[in-house]
Length: 163
Length: 212
Image (cartoon, rainbow over all chains, first blue to last red):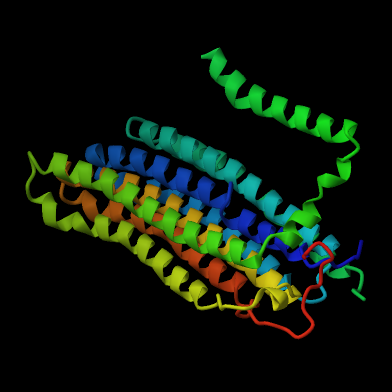
């Protein structure tokens, strides 16, 4: 069994796809945007002047999508047809899955928190600060995944040379 | 309701356990070989599946978004007919997602060329096959999610507009954030296949002992 079989890019490219789409950051970002958007529309019918401040959950969901994009671009730059070991392929797959699943969780959290907090903001304006704090904690989940994915990706360059 | 979880989790696990034990006990454990499967399937299978899923999922997302938004526009338009023309923007946002799928489908199909079987199985052709598969899946699923998201926010924009005309532009901002996902899928799909050449024959092809 060689170190650089021809099917190694299958796993590396799977990592790229995982980071941005399959289970992952896109699902989180889409959930976050849609759920918070429903809450914002509800808020807007009662207090239109508060809409701009309530766009924060939507922006944060967009940032989750950007994390996925960054990891995908980085991994896609490293996958190539020649001189690509199975080691690098599996590391890229793992990095993509790390970023993807954490993005999914973060987006899910941001969506539900954003929706409830924005609906509460109609009645009580003091919840805004707590909303931002909770959203920051949810966002940081996605950031952890990004960090781990970047660390793993940097290890993939130490791959053994192909014969 | 408990029986549903038996069917979805219990039955597949049971099948997996039975099949793996069968392979183990009949001395054919070597038959389970992921590497062999990946090497002996034709790159055309991967490439074509990717392109098909790309356009399929993109159009599914666009259609889903359009019906979610359209139902709300038509419903809201009964009591507030002024919303009908302005909210067609949301429908166009969903349509754009299908256009992305078409573009990527055309760009990917340009990489598929006819090569005789004996010269097909080279490293570069394997890479192109995998890249088109994963790229198509990425673009398709990103567009699917984007289309549904834009559809939901478009529906709330229409109903908000029916309640108060000043709300429309503000909720449109949320829709724009939703549509960036389709764009990211497009970017990553193009990046993945930038290293992939079109299918090329080679004099000294067949890198794998599993291909006959």
